[in-house]
Image 1 (spheres, helix red, strand yellow):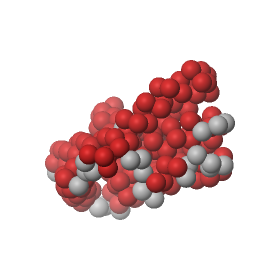
Image 2 (spheres, helix red, strand yellow):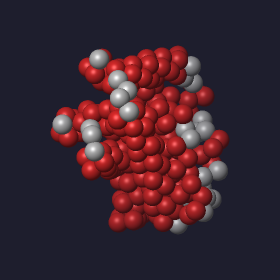
Image 3 (cartoon, helix red, strand yellow):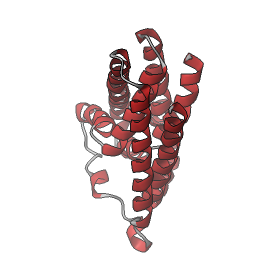
Length: 222
């Protein structure tokens, strides 16, 4: 049962890890002077935010099933989230900026360069909890865990595994900067530029993949 749940969670966690917003945020912070420790603070907030969202909805799903609620209901919820995310992906792709507009960095990126450690920590939580796309991803994962596992021990392990995988793309550049320092700055700058140019495409692809996986999981649970 545990291995089956992890197998369902793994692709979901990988898609969350590919979410461009937290990655762009941590890169901007790391490229600013003295960004290493502030990047670490953002990573801590990211871990807390991801764990809280998936943990809350895991508890909700377990409580619902424990009261005698039909697993079919959580399966239908996953189907609805899957369709919604795939629809959003198509809309995002159709509305993507083109030409010179695609080269312009979002205005919010400039505001991140001077963030304090505490505000960086709050940003990590915000992009995981208050961002609608991130929230939808966490809700889906929580429903998968809560409806597939019974007992807090297994559920906590699943939440930890999911959180680690989902946070790894934010952790990697932070560790690289703390270990290698200026030697990775050029590579991070190139990655930042690529993300700016392809942000809408990446978001659309991530949402489409996650929606398809969630939809498939919902069908399998019916």
